[in-house]
Image (cartoon, rainbow, N blue to C red; front, side, top):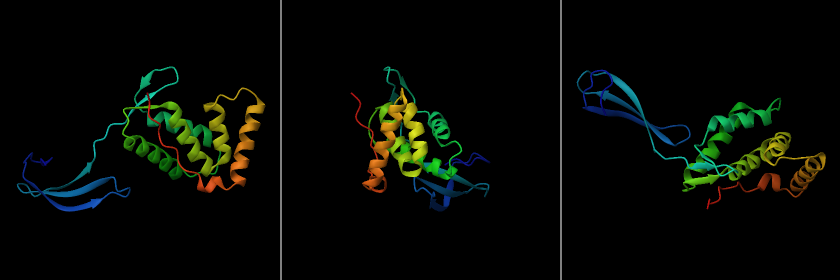
Length: 168
């Protein structure tokens, strides 16, 4: 690793630690030439899959777009911002580890709904109404009945998280 101060290539690792989410290694380094210390962050360089929209268009994964959708669904709901960050992190990790080059946008929507179902049912219905394009009150009512039935059966707590499906 090259020293950012004197550009010398001879540095040594003084300390290594895993980051909080255990996805990267933070290394404290010391330059053998000038003695300055600096930190580096080492993480796997994985590519996110392309997102295939319902109209067939392909686009890069945009975490900001997903965060805005979550924010709209969670507006004025008692959900902490760190919970939203955890949702975004879990979805991104699922996408990174799925091994696919392309993932349907529908699959991401299902992952989001599974996450929201577990933390805030009102936000879940809000998101589902846009995601599933509810056209009338009956569609809302049907989704709420389905959600209530799942909660009564105990699926709310034990529900398995959605994994991205293979795109064809």
